[in-house]
Image (cartoon, rainbow, N blue to C red):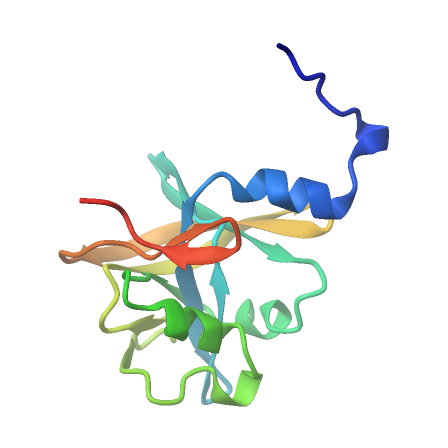
Length: 165
């Protein structure tokens, strides 16, 4: 039995969010020191883009109040969150003034801020921003990368989980 696909006219945001949610993704923290204070956000839209030049991307809502501040930094840190970082992810999406409370972080001399317990850390600069509907796709050029062992935090169907195995 074949179920017909819905047309553009049939797509409501709630149904579309549910459909998008069946695809699991990792979660990253994007952060920097801006005006002497840590600024950051969590993103579940991170992906590798290119090896030459080395590029990654993530998407941020056009309505984000954090992105305009964050993008002012000359460098951004991206941290791949580990399976035990569910609460950290919620904290990074919470009130701006307490996003980094109790977190162990490192900052580069250029302002890139990374979480010390992350699975991978990247030092990046904004390569390009592309408006895409209600989001901005941010392409980042990598300048440094490091990684460790462990399992990633997985975002699936609006919940956090872990890989089996």
